Amino acid sequence: MPATVGERVVHRRYVPYSHAHYAGNLVDGAYSLGLFGDVATEMCIRTDGDEGLFASYSDVQFRAPVIAGDVLEITCELVKAGTRSRVMEFAVHVVARGAATETAPGAADMLDEPLLATSATGTVVVPAKSS
Image (cartoon, rainbow, N blue to C red; front, side, top):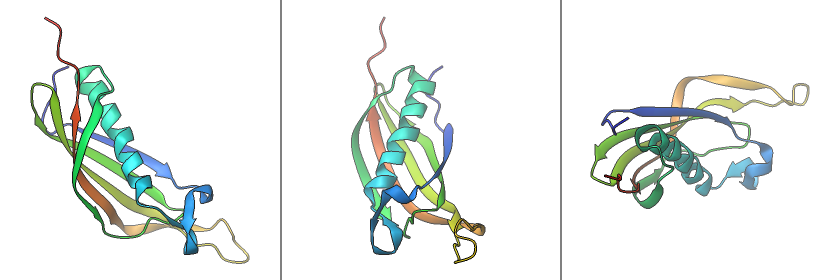
């Protein structure tokens, strides 16, 4: 399948408490970048039949915290396809957040509106097509 601008990949992921890195169960920003790598890999497999390799990120913005117990939706959209390069826009949205209480330690709430936590643009390269 040829790389098609506008193609999208969406993943959902629960953030386990083992990934909390800071006080208040805050997760480090690198967690979101790892998730971007996952959706970019699927995009490259879909469009090029290869996992591809990240070349760069630009315009990475950490807009809201990611907290252990969150449910995240990670999106990737192909915005430009060169001969070997693929430019993608990424976003991590929090769609649910833990709401633990003493009597309900596993309680959580779906958010009325997803919360944009991280966004970025990235460039991935794929192998040249064989003739």
